[in-house]
Figure 1 (tube, rainbow, N blue to C red):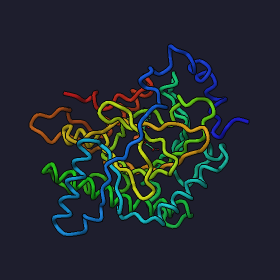
Figure 2: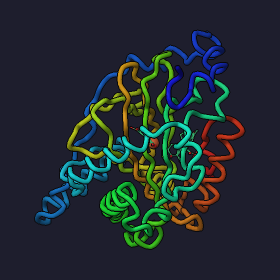
Figure 3: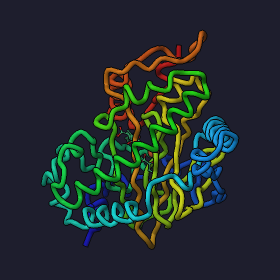
Length: 334
Ligand SMILES: C=C1C[C@]23C[C@@]1(O)CC[C@H]2[C@@]12CC[C@H](O)[C@@](C)(C(=O)O1)[C@H]2[C@@H]3C(=O)O
Ligand SMILES: O=C(O)CCC(=O)C(=O)O
Ligand SMILES: [Fe+2]
């Protein structure tokens, strides 16, 4: 029997044609099995509630990690272990539903295309992601109230994580001497979204990605992963593996912050590997503005031209559809 979702049947030709084929295999330097494990900068956010010296030191660390790594892990982040665990168990329950239910039925009032699996646009293995996901625009969820345990848990989770995202974004803006109310004004709860990811065991090859290399198209992302591991990111031109920390949330800079900060904060490429033995779960909160929001570099000599978030998303989607790859910010260089 094929797995759920049915990757092997649906993407049969892609796997047959690409695996072991020297012409389409990833170059040797991109082999995903030989990557060093690393601790991300670890930042204790409880210091934001202490005296001025501790608070300023913590803010400096956030700005430094966002500039040098584009990624950090935060502990004492204010999102309780209880809500993280409850969210995870709701997420596991949803993914356990039979494939037909996930693909055909409108769960809650997630929009019909909120369930995604595999990569329909992939023409070769490196464009493929062996994972399933629910993309959940928060507009649809936050008005539902106590609709059921999934929607109320998502609502509670999104509300606390959104507070954290706003605080981090404000700190990063202040560090650049910019207006920190920008995020409260433009990234309302309803324009942000959640992505619940499941990476099933992959029986075919460790060369298959769980999630293909990408940068996030938002201001910043807050990620809650489990203990399986598999997240990798580029640091100083090399791929490194992130060591999971059960107490930490991972925070990374997205393309919009890189553009807005005129390249000071880095939107770094990351990917997820597959695992033959165990499935992996993660959930990501994306801090996004409304589609009309203009993203303008904060400099007299802007690296990127001004663009709206709508224009950015459309361009990313168009590139993925036509070439299989996201081009992202380089399209908007001046
Ligand atoms: C096939 C793709 C969809 C995606 C861009 C990509 O080329 C690779 C990863 C995908 C992802 C994952 C994180 C975000 O949800 C997203 C918006 C992003 O920036 O990269 C999506 C992209 C998408 O759904 O368009
Ligand atoms: O699952 C992960 O660790 C990363 C997920 C991710 O990068 C994303 O959803 O954009
Ligand atoms: Fe991502």
